[in-house]
Image: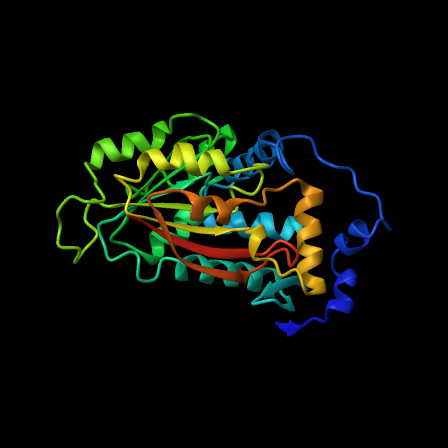
Length: 298
């Protein structure tokens, strides 16, 4: 990995030119920047790949997808600094940020519910890193759910089902809470996480034009039974307004019609205490980095 100057970013990304109106871009249809159907088509191709190559595990499927989509070197970001990295190195950095986001949160016995988990790659990474926890994922893309079930069929600590943020009632989460009788105030001594539920998202809230109602109305209904939340998301409010990179990132989110209210909605919702907000822990797309948000139910 080597440093990349902002001046050289256009050599490795088409987006600076697009945002400045110097290059055309055919916008995708769907809510936010990319609709479920687009993801479902991609997952369908990966499902076929996995079926045709049963020796491939989840990491091999992800690696194949990465190398199909990009060629080394690729531009990435960490802590508002830009770098060039190998495609595999980029995935390693993203995996490190994923595992680190749960440091101090998982002590063993918790159930992590990953909302909008795609085809479940992150579930596999987390299950390997935290062998004493269970992981439940949900996604609206049918092929994503099918692929996850195919790849993790021999993992009794990983289950995946249908889920959509836009539903008024989250049946996937309801089922987990009913099965585990978890409660945020069950009278335990807090020494371990046995039976507790931790909510998680990674890059799945981005495509919603607004998450205010999802957080303040739907999520809020579960705060009496969920201990904490961990999010690796693209958080618009954290982009600086006084730097060129920050302005490019804000313009990118605007152009893609991604939401700009996640952190604001979390902080405004009663029963949620945002305990940390760490900007740009890793950016697989340097104009759309992941930031780490943690909160506790109070």
